[in-house]
Image (cartoon, rainbow, N blue to C red; front, side):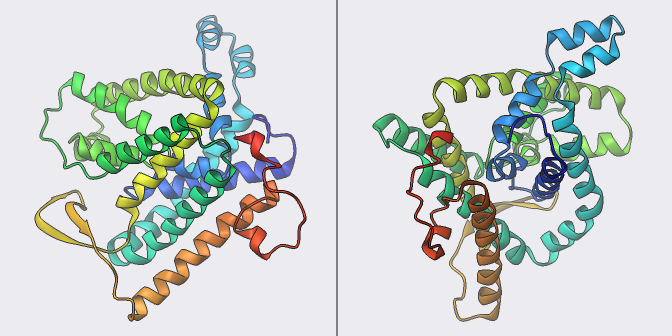
Length: 325
């Protein structure tokens, strides 16, 4: 799909993508960037963010509002943002309840989504040369390490808030790493929530400024790397998703030292489920639903999903869509 939607179907797909991204961002440990990657709008999203450049600021300062708007990819961002906002408003209560009461089932479904995306995108990467393999391993190790970090005890100074905003928004647009989770690790999440409730304008403005700076520069860096080292970068992004499975794994138990922070448990260890239990069977069913859903949607777009090809009589040769990677 081009960056600018052209048909009602394009707008509907972007709204649905926003719903998926907003739903993911509500769940700690799941990234909206992962959903953008799964739904194949990731690079379009980066380009849309990049459309907010110095020319736009220049027109705004000259009060040329219409010209400034025309320079941005607002037709892309409007339905996407509407979907994200709808998900946050309509689904936050449901997902929060599931997170508190049925975390195994919730994370089983998201696990299916992410694993299906790893399989689909990984199968389309051609030329597994040492740099590509190293990039995949590097992305996996970095994400695995990040999602296992314990929150730091830091002050809430303006500089720390600003830098936290920079890092959190950078993480938010990376597949596999949750921006809210990064704020938790940096010790700023609860303080940020309190700032929202108490309307601490200066603190919120400082955090927002960090987010603006972070997403402005990092989106351009990512876009440049994807344009110049596409296959290597795609492998790294797939690695981020692989590493994030440590956090998404549904079955956990407390380690000897477990830190509780705003509903998040740090220091947990992943364990195997009771394979004979009804809980495992239902969780497995949800995993399969998530896996098949992503595989089906990806196959509708490429006609070349490795899982769906097992059940398809299509004679299309593998690799037809490989130039997308």
